[in-house]
Amino acid sequence: MARVKRGTKRRARRKKYLKRTKGFFLTKSKLYQSAQEAANRADRYAFRDRRVKKREYRSCGFSASAPPHA
Image 1 (tube, rainbow, N blue to C red):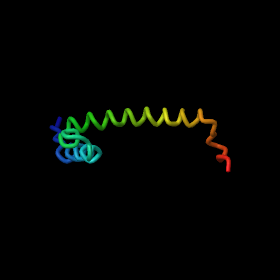
Image 2 (cartoon, rainbow, N blue to C red):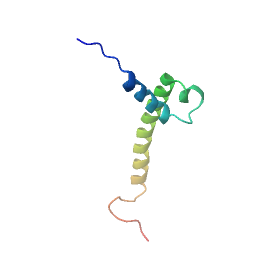
Image 3 (cartoon, helix red, strand yellow):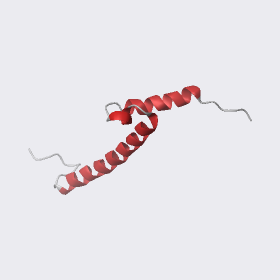
């Protein structure tokens, strides 16, 4: 079986993570491993907090199908 060398694929994946973590504090935006951990953590919290926001909105008494009162 042939040896797999991931030159451009690996570089593209790393660049993608570093682009996503632009503006993060210190090494979280500079080093790949730290950036990957920070981005994954941010994704987990973003998903959780979107669900919480939705839950709070539903409990306000508004419904998504009916327009708000004028």
